[in-house]
Image (cartoon, rainbow, N blue to C red; front, side, top):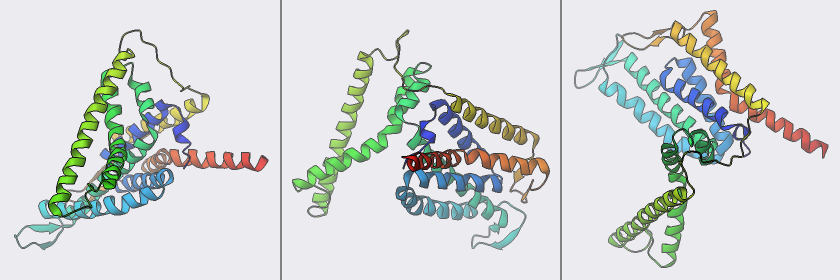
Length: 296
């Protein structure tokens, strides 16, 4: 799937994901959390397709259920007592609601990070931080791409081992265990060698040396300036609302928070607009692309 947001300047991508992920972690208001979750889910499905649906169904949904159930079992705060557990501890409405909220925060942040990994490639990350913190930017970029490369390589190794009858699907239990250990050993060796080769390659190219120039394909255009200004303005507006207490919401000892009020409603609208930035950009890009195709 073509993603128009990926074509923007890396500074725009970084500012957007920094804003939405930070707000998703610290804004516990149910409306803000719901808006962020829906937008993150929609964007992940747009750029990852069926893989995102499978990931959400097999991983995030069970995580939501487990996290929501664990909190009431250990957290007994709250004024609204529904019943008592066998241990004698109370089961409160507030603990149940907070458990659901905590689970939603977790899966929302994970969804945004899945989009972040798809948009913020290694070259973008190095472009932004290569001159400021060259060593750290290289380590982070390698860490971010480690999992997808690890998955690709382990499939290749597993396929090669299967051809000679040494895959985890061949033989008895002990043989499968030995085959799995062999594949894991090969993978660890590959990862270590790859890291050493990457470090030597970057060192030989003078990475991190003072005065070193770097080639870049990224240019800051007018549309990037507009997008950056919009994201920054929305973020400042939301931060001001948080400081003023218009997005205040608590779960203990009772559930209470701001729901109405002109400024509070405007914060919800601005926050929704911020989270919808990638979808709006992609929809506009799709319309432009269809318009160009129609003229051919």
